[in-house]
Image (tube, rainbow, N blue to C red; front, side, top):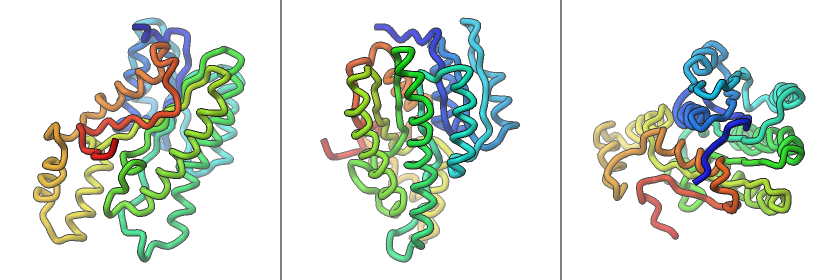
Length: 261
């Protein structure tokens, strides 16, 4: 199985922690040059310093806010002008938990900007280089909510579905060029995001955090939350040469929690 990414350049968003950080490490471990993108430059410096370099890779970082799309566009266009991106991993922290009822429309606008619009801006910037170099992988880290809406995540459910539809459409358009577009759908994963969801659920229902955690784990056939590196491994596979014939799919990495096919 060909998992070798030597000579490929990956741009990994949301790479300062959680699944994004684990993905940056996984891709570097397969030989890719990795540029990490997130808001906190001081954290990104430490991330880059710790990435594997067993194949003399050159890693770097971009400090940018995904919700500031024009700034994001400019930073990434400057990057690809000097070094084309062959692998794009779109990943960003989810919208705040809450019900659809009573949500301010501005929350939807902000979520669409941070996720859908940011993903589109990044894809537009990197696809020309993928076409020229004959290698392209776009992987969007979304959520199992694109298959089954999750209670209490109204804005997130809505936004994730929009991203999944955008990705499927883009996959069809780019397939003739040999560029694949896929979505990885994490379930409950040991990240700061899941801690936020547990806390919000506990406050909303009056239950203890321990009780909320236990009920979430009980709903997972494998009986535990995922580790970030387990989700990152799925992302890395879809970025590899071995996954060249897989495009337009939604891949749950959720321990069997999603009940739909």
